[in-house]
Amino acid sequence: MKLLIGLFLILSIVLVGCAPNLSGGTVTVTVNDTEIVEDIVEDVVIEEPTGPVSEQHLVMITDDGFEPNEITIDVGDTVTWENVRSKSPTKAIVIGVHSCNKVKSKIYDTGDSYSFTFEETNEECTVVDGVYETMAPMTVVIQ
Image (cartoon, rainbow, N blue to C red; front, top):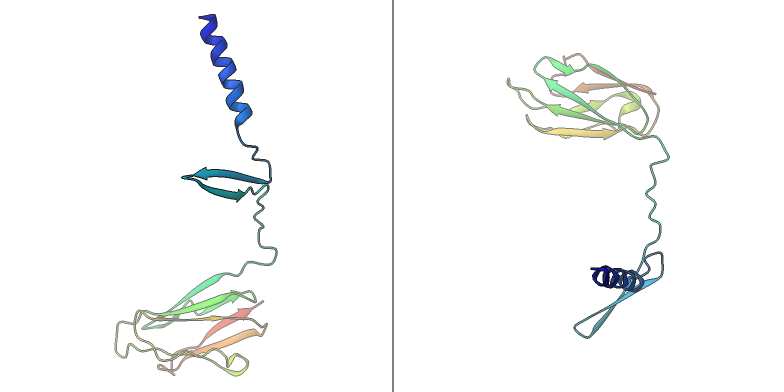
């Protein structure tokens, strides 16, 4: 029994001593007479974003208007207007007025959406629906 334990200890020491050093450098492995050399990565650092994280905001275009009809966002945030109308006409078009004239979608159907990322501070941006021109506008407040 002592002999068996002794052989086990010697075998364990030999196996640990033969194990590759994974603390840096390269590892060479031979497979079917082909030598494969791999670099060992010592420290992998995943960096967190350093700047502010932009957010996504959803506005529904309903039969009764924008829902919500006012939102407050930060510069760099994206607003998505989704057309969920069920009554005719079911089309929608999002148009920003005055200083927000870059906000302009194509005409789109129920189930479709339009997104815009606000890159500038305008304080307030008025958005209207070009199909229902009599519908109350919505306000995007950009901080």
